[in-house]
Structures are given as structure tokens and as C-alpha cells.
Image 1 (cartoon, rainbow, N blue to C red):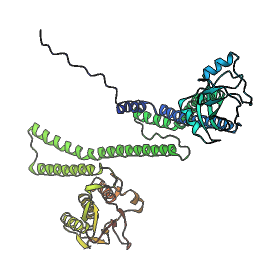
Image 2: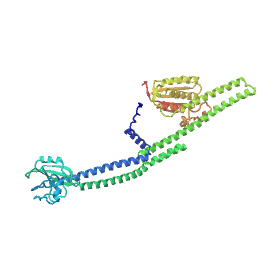
Image 3: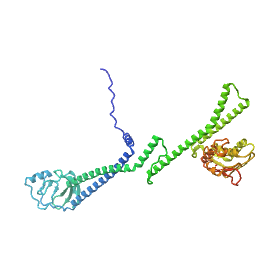
Image 4: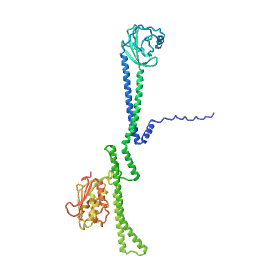
Length: 495
């Protein structure tokens, strides 16, 4: 006989865990549309409310009906039997009575009443049903006279009843009077009430579902409009699309926020388009000049007629200056390509503005060797980007150097967080002051000077990122030149 091991027992398939079923239910619920979920939740809420109300109503009615039955049973007068002939069981008493040999009882006995003695039970004349006794009924013999107990019971024909057992000591032997009230009418009433409440509940749930659908359609109409607008933007890339706003509820706030976002996106795209167009226009000039000079050098080399040394040197110097101008323009464009919003987080550091102003003045002195710089700065510390703020101050000084006459004076002051740069040049016409911080804007009177028109735009952006403000206008004393003012929040100590 081969000792072949029996196959391993396969464990019975485990029933899905409760959490898994819950996860599947949540997944199904979340996969539905918002309208379906709103209809489902409203119908479920109404169904729960109706079910709880129906149950409460049913239990209240049940308690009142049975309470009335018990009250009527308790108020019934006790039956005082005369001579009793008892039988072992209620069924035997009924059989003997049907045979006609049951002796009459002298006392008047209410219907559905029987008497319990130690030998058995006794029924009143004409009874066609008896109360089913239980072994626990023997405890009623220990009651004091007039005391009673009530229990749920039934008749021999199966009808439910409420039974009251009362001890009676007016007879030579101990007797317990059993009085029963049938509860079948109460059960029938409760069953009819349950059917009625169930029908009303189902009808209410159906009406709630219909009403929930109507409410969801009306409430989600702005959301549908918002969805259509978003899908339209995604399909056509036409930012700036808005939807009508009605009221001041949450949906109206959402619509307002969407309109603000769409308008901001449209403005951002417009600025981006304008920046690209202006950058292309500004890049075209140095690139064209560079291409012309390179073509001239290549043609000279191909034809075998070299350029004079002085011309070649001048041409190469011009190309170098154009490359430097192109490099500065690209750097300015990279600076302006950053988001025009205040910075936050680790990029913000404590910056000594007076030290930045000192370094900027040193660089400006190299670019304007014939100019006089009057500097008066006091310690001032701000939170910001050190590189951005230094470039902003340098751009202000470069602008002052560019427009200052030979031998002119440039005044640099820093007091209580207010940095001023004053030159004594021609100044800025009043009708052009509103454009000085626009990108690529250059005054018509200074188009021949080098520059791309991005310097003051970079100043404005860097100052805004540090939480300050910058202005440019005529000199405060009414003299010649322009006055640039930068206000930055901070303090005289590096805290």
C-alpha cells in the first residue's frame, strides 16, 4: 500500500471583510456623478426620516392600544364563582361542557373568564374557548387578596390575549380568577397601520427622489455652466470666458472665483503675448546688426579682399558690444519671466539694504567715471531676495548715470527705509511718468541711447516681491533731474 499523503485541505472561501465591502461601496458611490450622489443622498435622508417617523408612530400607537387593553382589563370587576367543578385542563373542561354535563355556576361570570384551582380549571357555562394555562400561573396562589398579575397569553383556539390573574380568598379553597382580553383586533389594527405607514413611506421616498432630482437639477445648473465653460476653455484654449453670477451663495462665490481666475489667466496670457512680441522686437535689432557684421566678414574672407585693420577692429568691437547688449537683454527677460507675485519661504532672507546701496554705488562709479556721487545711508534691514534687490538698486543708478550730464551729481540717500536716487539730467516729461515701469517702454527722446526698456520694470518687480513700493518723478525741490524713491518695510537692526 502506497503511503500517498492526502491532498491539502482547501480552506473555505472567506467571506468578504466588512472593510472591503465598505471600500467597494465608497468606490461605487464616488464613481457616480454629483447629480446622482445628490439625488441618492437626499432620497436616503428622506427615507431615513420617514422610516424613523413611521417606526415611532407605530410604536406609539402600539403602546397606546395595549395600554388601553391593559387598563380595561384592570378595571374589569372580579368574578366571584359559586360552586365549581374543576377539570385537569382547559381542553377537558371544554369537552365536558360540550357534552352538556357541566353544572351551572350560581354567580354571574364575565365572558373569557375561567377559574384556576389546585385541581385544575373551571369554565363558565357557554364558554367556547378557554385560556391556556402555564406552569408559572401557580405563583398567583401566593398573591394577597385583591392582588393580580398580568401576562401575555393565548386561547385554546390560538388567538392571542392578555391575561390577568387575581387571587380570590372568598372560596373555601384557593382560587385564582383568570380574565383574558383578546388582542387579535389590536394585532389586526397594528398590521393595517404597518401596511399604511409602509405605503406612505414608499410613496414619500419616491416623491423625495423626484424632488431631489428637480432640486439637484436646479441647484447644479451653475455647476453645469461652470463645467461647460471649463470644457470650452480646455477645447478652444480661449481663456477669459466667464459665466453669469446670481445671488451670493456658495455657488455664486464659486462662479465669481472662476470668473476671477479666468480673467487673471486671460490677462496673464495677454502679458505673456505682449512680452514675447516686445522681446522679439527688441532682439531683432541686435541680431540683425550681428548678422550684417558677420556677413560682411564672411564676404570679405570669400572675396579675398580683407578689410582694413582699423575697420576690422571697429567691426569686431561693435559685434562685442552687440553681444553684451544681447546678453543683458536675455538676462532681463529671464528676470521678468518669474511670477510677478511676492516671494515666500526660504528664498526670503534678512538683507542689509545699506550694504547693497554701497556696492551699487561702487559699480555705478565705474560706469560713470566723470560723475559725482553723494551718498548718505543709514543701516536698514529688510526681508527679501538679496540678488533681486541689488539688481534693482543697480538699475536705478544705471538709469541715473545714463541721463546725467558730464560732471553731474547723483545723490543717493537711505533714511528710515526710504531709498532715493536723484540725478540732475533732463528729467521725465509729466505725460510719460505713467509708462516708466512698463516693459520695453522707452521715452521717444531717449530711443538713441542703449538699453532695452526693461530696467525699471525689473526694479518694480523686485521691490514688489520684497513688499515695498517704488515711484519715479520730478525732483522734490523743483530742480532738474528725476527722483526715484523706494520704500521697503524693515528695521534698523537685523531682526
